[in-house]
Length: 313
Image (cartoon, rainbow, N blue to C red; front, side):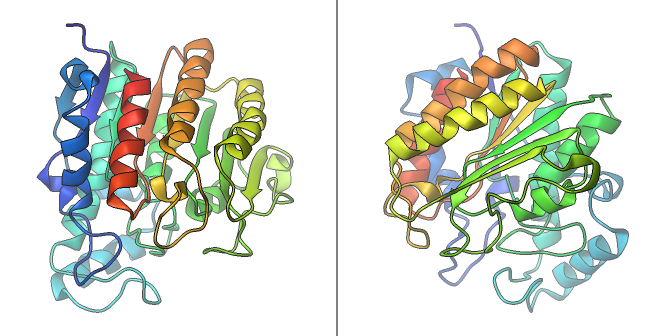
């Protein structure tokens, strides 16, 4: 059977998570894989293990001082890396470095071909800033991938699409003044959900003013509202003509998530992946890299991410 998509998975990224009943537990990886293995697309996937990102790769996005702080916190194995959402534990640096390295492994494979679509479940850590952790996110693999897609592979136009319930503030503000990065983010309205950013009026700054798209959704919005909102995302990405599309497909936007208030079904994620696949085929030689992101109802994340992989396949 023909291999049609790449899956990056393994214990190295499954280890990224937090104990003590934290919403981002280390069980999320296995719950997803059990669902995916029942899908007809399982046999079509080329499976790869993640690797650890190097210091230089991490520092393509993060400051050296922040990377050193994470290393020290990982050795100490206690405390928090932010104001209280993201605990330190022994080995957190290694786990977070593997998340970034897994995303970069996916990037390398789709850039060098012949398979042009990939998915990594424990990734899409979109809240981490260049110099800080935030919202369960230690390192921002999305940001590192964007930086290295341009530096390592010479891409001039990259599109980042985020359908997680939470605004991807770590990506948005890192590239807010960069017109080469198209950032389209459909999220629950920041007036009702962390991090409180991503207003429709936030469209970029300086040379990038008017080049970013934020689509805040009201609490309770379902699939029909998402499909309508995504038409604007498609038009925006199409106009940018990206050479690579990144999709952060957090499943916390599905109804029944314990910490958010949207009401999509997994059909929303299938729709986004299918439509972006068509745009990738049109503009980016098929290059589409999807990252799991958030999602704290285990059944939701397993089904939504499986639908994404099926769309990629």
